[in-house]
Length: 253
Image 1 (cartoon, helix red, strand yellow):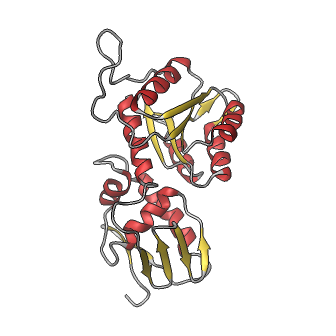
Image 2 (cartoon, one colour; image 1 turned 180 degrees about the vertical axis):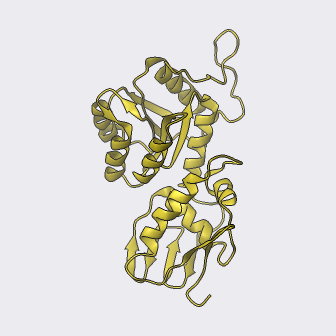
Image 3 (cartoon, helix red, strand yellow; image 1 turned 90 degrees about the vertical axis):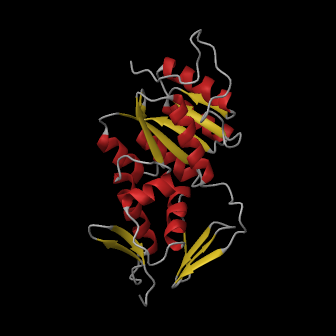
Protein backbone atom coordinates (compact mmCIF):
# COMPACT_ATOMS: atom_id res chain seq x y z
CA UNK A 1 0.00 0.00 0.00
CA UNK A 2 1.30 3.47 -0.88
CA UNK A 3 1.20 5.84 2.07
CA UNK A 4 1.46 9.62 1.93
CA UNK A 5 3.93 11.50 4.04
CA UNK A 6 1.64 13.19 6.58
CA UNK A 7 3.54 16.48 6.79
CA UNK A 8 2.32 18.55 9.67
CA UNK A 9 2.32 15.74 12.29
CA UNK A 10 4.58 15.90 15.30
CA UNK A 11 6.68 13.01 16.61
CA UNK A 12 3.87 12.00 18.92
CA UNK A 13 1.55 11.68 15.92
CA UNK A 14 -0.54 14.73 16.83
CA UNK A 15 -1.09 17.60 14.45
CA UNK A 16 1.30 20.50 14.74
CA UNK A 17 0.16 24.12 14.76
CA UNK A 18 -0.53 25.17 11.20
CA UNK A 19 2.63 24.77 9.22
CA UNK A 20 3.54 26.81 6.18
CA UNK A 21 1.54 25.59 3.20
CA UNK A 22 -1.07 23.83 5.34
CA UNK A 23 -3.70 26.57 5.40
CA UNK A 24 -6.55 26.68 2.89
CA UNK A 25 -6.89 29.82 0.81
CA UNK A 26 -10.55 29.71 1.83
CA UNK A 27 -12.85 27.03 3.33
CA UNK A 28 -13.78 25.43 0.01
CA UNK A 29 -15.68 22.15 -0.29
CA UNK A 30 -13.41 19.22 -1.23
CA UNK A 31 -14.53 15.75 -2.30
CA UNK A 32 -11.82 13.12 -1.68
CA UNK A 33 -12.25 9.84 -3.60
CA UNK A 34 -9.72 7.28 -2.35
CA UNK A 35 -10.28 3.61 -1.54
CA UNK A 36 -7.12 3.03 0.55
CA UNK A 37 -8.32 3.75 4.07
CA UNK A 38 -4.95 4.91 5.44
CA UNK A 39 -4.46 7.45 2.66
CA UNK A 40 -8.05 8.66 2.86
CA UNK A 41 -7.79 9.10 6.63
CA UNK A 42 -4.68 11.25 6.37
CA UNK A 43 -6.14 13.36 3.56
CA UNK A 44 -9.38 13.95 5.44
CA UNK A 45 -7.56 14.89 8.65
CA UNK A 46 -5.04 17.23 7.03
CA UNK A 47 -7.42 18.93 4.60
CA UNK A 48 -9.91 19.52 7.42
CA UNK A 49 -7.08 20.81 9.60
CA UNK A 50 -6.05 23.18 6.80
CA UNK A 51 -9.55 24.68 6.77
CA UNK A 52 -11.28 22.86 3.92
CA UNK A 53 -14.73 21.29 4.26
CA UNK A 54 -14.15 17.66 3.35
CA UNK A 55 -16.34 14.71 2.37
CA UNK A 56 -14.86 11.37 1.30
CA UNK A 57 -15.89 8.43 -0.85
CA UNK A 58 -14.20 5.07 -1.41
CA UNK A 59 -15.75 4.24 -4.79
CA UNK A 60 -17.10 5.81 -7.97
CA UNK A 61 -20.67 4.97 -7.00
CA UNK A 62 -20.34 6.62 -3.60
CA UNK A 63 -18.62 9.64 -5.17
CA UNK A 64 -21.49 10.20 -7.61
CA UNK A 65 -24.01 10.35 -4.76
CA UNK A 66 -21.84 12.63 -2.63
CA UNK A 67 -21.13 14.97 -5.54
CA UNK A 68 -24.86 15.58 -6.05
CA UNK A 69 -25.44 16.26 -2.34
CA UNK A 70 -22.21 18.02 -1.41
CA UNK A 71 -21.64 20.06 -4.61
CA UNK A 72 -17.83 20.19 -4.22
CA UNK A 73 -15.69 23.01 -5.56
CA UNK A 74 -12.59 20.78 -5.63
CA UNK A 75 -12.14 17.04 -6.09
CA UNK A 76 -9.14 14.86 -5.21
CA UNK A 77 -9.49 11.63 -7.22
CA UNK A 78 -7.43 8.46 -7.07
CA UNK A 79 -6.99 7.00 -10.54
CA UNK A 80 -7.45 3.38 -9.41
CA UNK A 81 -10.80 2.73 -7.72
CA UNK A 82 -12.53 -0.59 -6.93
CA UNK A 83 -15.56 -0.08 -9.20
CA UNK A 84 -14.05 1.91 -12.04
CA UNK A 85 -11.46 4.44 -13.12
CA UNK A 86 -10.94 7.80 -11.48
CA UNK A 87 -10.29 9.11 -14.99
CA UNK A 88 -13.80 8.20 -16.10
CA UNK A 89 -15.17 9.65 -12.86
CA UNK A 90 -13.29 12.89 -13.58
CA UNK A 91 -14.94 13.13 -16.99
CA UNK A 92 -18.36 12.48 -15.48
CA UNK A 93 -18.00 15.00 -12.64
CA UNK A 94 -16.68 17.70 -14.94
CA UNK A 95 -19.60 17.11 -17.33
CA UNK A 96 -21.95 17.86 -14.42
CA UNK A 97 -20.01 20.90 -13.20
CA UNK A 98 -17.61 22.64 -15.57
CA UNK A 99 -16.30 24.84 -12.73
CA UNK A 100 -15.21 21.87 -10.61
CA UNK A 101 -11.41 21.75 -10.22
CA UNK A 102 -9.91 18.25 -10.18
CA UNK A 103 -6.62 17.05 -8.68
CA UNK A 104 -5.61 13.48 -9.60
CA UNK A 105 -3.65 11.09 -7.38
CA UNK A 106 -1.50 8.96 -9.70
CA UNK A 107 1.28 6.40 -9.49
CA UNK A 108 4.73 7.90 -9.96
CA UNK A 109 5.20 6.06 -13.26
CA UNK A 110 1.65 6.56 -14.50
CA UNK A 111 2.53 9.00 -17.32
CA UNK A 112 -0.29 7.73 -19.53
CA UNK A 113 -2.80 8.24 -16.69
CA UNK A 114 -1.59 11.80 -16.18
CA UNK A 115 -1.89 12.74 -19.84
CA UNK A 116 -5.27 11.00 -20.18
CA UNK A 117 -6.52 12.66 -17.01
CA UNK A 118 -5.59 16.12 -18.23
CA UNK A 119 -7.31 15.40 -21.54
CA UNK A 120 -10.47 14.37 -19.69
CA UNK A 121 -10.64 17.59 -17.70
CA UNK A 122 -8.35 17.20 -14.67
CA UNK A 123 -6.54 20.41 -13.74
CA UNK A 124 -3.48 19.00 -12.00
CA UNK A 125 -2.00 15.84 -10.51
CA UNK A 126 0.09 14.69 -7.57
CA UNK A 127 2.12 11.48 -7.71
CA UNK A 128 2.22 8.90 -4.93
CA UNK A 129 3.83 8.92 -2.44
CA UNK A 130 2.95 12.56 -1.74
CA UNK A 131 3.04 14.94 1.20
CA UNK A 132 -0.26 16.33 2.41
CA UNK A 133 1.35 19.78 2.37
CA UNK A 134 1.80 19.36 -1.38
CA UNK A 135 -1.86 18.42 -1.81
CA UNK A 136 -2.97 21.50 0.17
CA UNK A 137 -0.63 23.69 -1.90
CA UNK A 138 -1.95 22.26 -5.19
CA UNK A 139 -5.57 22.79 -4.10
CA UNK A 140 -4.78 26.38 -3.16
CA UNK A 141 -3.31 26.95 -6.62
CA UNK A 142 -6.54 25.64 -8.15
CA UNK A 143 -8.58 27.92 -5.88
CA UNK A 144 -6.59 30.98 -6.94
CA UNK A 145 -7.73 30.36 -10.51
CA UNK A 146 -11.35 30.77 -9.46
CA UNK A 147 -10.96 33.58 -6.89
CA UNK A 148 -11.45 37.08 -8.38
CA UNK A 149 -8.24 39.08 -8.52
CA UNK A 150 -7.76 42.02 -6.16
CA UNK A 151 -7.43 44.37 -9.13
CA UNK A 152 -10.57 45.59 -10.93
CA UNK A 153 -11.89 43.02 -13.39
CA UNK A 154 -11.36 43.92 -17.02
CA UNK A 155 -12.32 42.68 -20.45
CA UNK A 156 -9.30 41.55 -22.48
CA UNK A 157 -9.38 41.56 -26.29
CA UNK A 158 -7.09 40.14 -28.94
CA UNK A 159 -8.56 40.42 -32.42
CA UNK A 160 -12.07 38.96 -32.28
CA UNK A 161 -11.32 37.07 -29.03
CA UNK A 162 -12.76 38.54 -25.82
CA UNK A 163 -12.30 37.44 -22.22
CA UNK A 164 -14.33 38.98 -19.39
CA UNK A 165 -12.56 38.49 -16.04
CA UNK A 166 -15.68 39.42 -14.07
CA UNK A 167 -18.13 37.00 -15.68
CA UNK A 168 -15.51 34.46 -16.86
CA UNK A 169 -17.11 34.65 -20.30
CA UNK A 170 -15.00 33.97 -23.38
CA UNK A 171 -16.21 34.81 -26.91
CA UNK A 172 -14.47 34.29 -30.26
CA UNK A 173 -16.02 35.74 -33.41
CA UNK A 174 -19.37 35.95 -31.65
CA UNK A 175 -19.22 32.31 -30.49
CA UNK A 176 -19.32 31.65 -26.75
CA UNK A 177 -16.55 29.29 -25.59
CA UNK A 178 -16.70 27.17 -22.44
CA UNK A 179 -13.37 26.81 -20.61
CA UNK A 180 -12.34 24.99 -17.46
CA UNK A 181 -10.84 27.18 -14.68
CA UNK A 182 -7.32 26.18 -15.72
CA UNK A 183 -7.96 26.81 -19.41
CA UNK A 184 -9.40 30.21 -18.49
CA UNK A 185 -6.34 31.11 -16.40
CA UNK A 186 -4.02 29.95 -19.21
CA UNK A 187 -5.86 32.02 -21.81
CA UNK A 188 -5.89 35.02 -19.52
CA UNK A 189 -2.10 34.70 -19.08
CA UNK A 190 -1.57 34.65 -22.85
CA UNK A 191 -3.91 37.60 -23.41
CA UNK A 192 -2.03 39.66 -20.83
CA UNK A 193 1.25 38.93 -22.63
CA UNK A 194 0.29 39.34 -26.30
CA UNK A 195 3.18 39.05 -28.77
CA UNK A 196 5.60 37.84 -26.07
CA UNK A 197 7.15 34.40 -26.48
CA UNK A 198 6.47 32.44 -23.30
CA UNK A 199 8.48 29.33 -22.48
CA UNK A 200 6.82 26.19 -21.17
CA UNK A 201 8.60 26.63 -17.84
CA UNK A 202 7.38 30.23 -17.56
CA UNK A 203 3.82 29.10 -18.18
CA UNK A 204 4.18 26.19 -15.74
CA UNK A 205 5.36 28.60 -13.05
CA UNK A 206 2.83 31.37 -13.62
CA UNK A 207 -0.30 29.31 -14.31
CA UNK A 208 0.30 26.12 -12.33
CA UNK A 209 2.60 27.50 -9.63
CA UNK A 210 5.37 24.95 -10.27
CA UNK A 211 8.98 26.15 -10.11
CA UNK A 212 10.05 23.05 -12.00
CA UNK A 213 8.78 19.71 -13.21
CA UNK A 214 7.22 18.01 -16.20
CA UNK A 215 6.06 20.56 -18.79
CA UNK A 216 3.86 18.06 -20.65
CA UNK A 217 0.87 19.45 -18.72
CA UNK A 218 1.48 22.81 -20.45
CA UNK A 219 1.60 21.24 -23.91
CA UNK A 220 -1.59 19.30 -23.26
CA UNK A 221 -3.57 22.31 -22.06
CA UNK A 222 -2.33 24.53 -24.90
CA UNK A 223 -3.47 21.87 -27.36
CA UNK A 224 -6.89 21.79 -25.68
CA UNK A 225 -7.10 25.59 -25.64
CA UNK A 226 -6.23 25.80 -29.34
CA UNK A 227 -8.99 23.32 -30.08
CA UNK A 228 -11.47 25.73 -28.53
CA UNK A 229 -10.34 29.25 -29.50
CA UNK A 230 -8.72 28.53 -32.89
CA UNK A 231 -11.44 26.19 -34.20
CA UNK A 232 -13.98 26.59 -37.01
CA UNK A 233 -11.66 28.17 -39.58
CA UNK A 234 -10.81 31.37 -37.69
CA UNK A 235 -7.36 32.94 -37.90
CA UNK A 236 -5.11 31.17 -35.37
CA UNK A 237 -4.08 33.29 -32.39
CA UNK A 238 -1.95 30.78 -30.44
CA UNK A 239 1.37 30.05 -32.14
CA UNK A 240 4.25 27.67 -31.42
CA UNK A 241 7.68 29.28 -31.60
CA UNK A 242 9.89 26.26 -32.14
CA UNK A 243 12.71 25.93 -29.66
CA UNK A 244 11.35 28.73 -27.44
CA UNK A 245 7.72 28.26 -26.47
CA UNK A 246 4.36 29.80 -27.40
CA UNK A 247 2.97 33.22 -28.23
CA UNK A 248 -0.44 34.79 -28.71
CA UNK A 249 -0.48 37.08 -31.72
CA UNK A 250 -3.24 39.25 -33.11
CA UNK A 251 -4.43 38.69 -36.69
CA UNK A 252 -2.36 41.63 -38.02
CA UNK A 253 0.89 40.49 -36.35
